[in-house]
Length: 149
Image 1 (tube, rainbow, N blue to C red):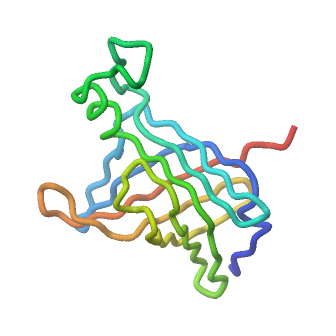
Image 2 (image 1 turned 90 degrees about the vertical axis):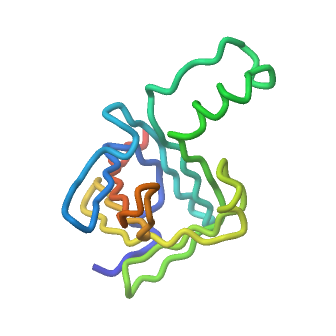
Image 3 (image 1 turned 120 degrees about the horizontal axis):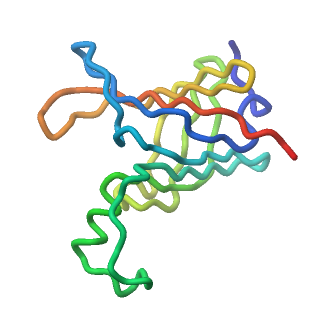
């Protein structure tokens, strides 16, 4: 497959996000109730928001009044970022050039993603990372295209 802008442009809904470990173990990255959206615009901007839908609610109705502990518990199982993207068609890779992110260490950096598109399904493999337990894994994110109304 040669990846093109046409393959990616549009809105996508998260189907699953799985941590895949070197030893073959597979487990849901955000637990059993993950959800999210991914959007690729024709002018080259990507935005992604995804995470656990089981995050605890705050005792406050105002985000600015939430306690630090509440914010940590809400943010840990959640990813949000946006910025320009470029496609490397020969390697079926898309690079997200992150401008703004919940995890600020991603800002001004790149997130490299291997991509497979088949009809209305998008599967993204993220770069390998090391977990808190020292084990190496990568995330596999499956998305379904949201039809244009």
